[in-house]
Length: 141
Image (cartoon, rainbow, N blue to C red):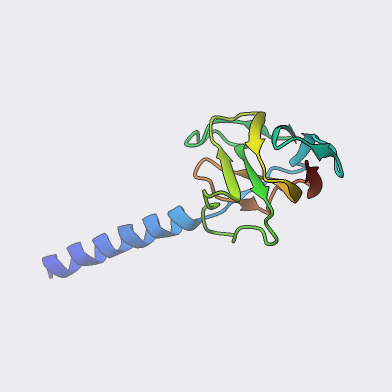
């Protein structure tokens, strides 16, 4: 009986931890994110500085669990937003700025590219609802 109770308690703890790990962080009311520069439709060099801004939310490094904070992720040529309930990927199309940066130097290949920001919470998870910028298009010379 004691063994059964111990197993039941352990199972409950594991289930709770699992649910917390995938729980989404509610987006603060009125929170927004935008790309300050370059402008939509701009022609830019292959190495471009992208400047970010937030509204009604503060920036904090990844891992900082302060309420109403997040950090930037730059989505390059991404058609579909990252899935809710899963961390934002970290790859060539999903750049993480977990030190609460407000701009980044990005290298792009010549041609047309789309850029969009998404704020992630302390664990790189999208907010609920997602806090995303307008998608812009740049032409790289």
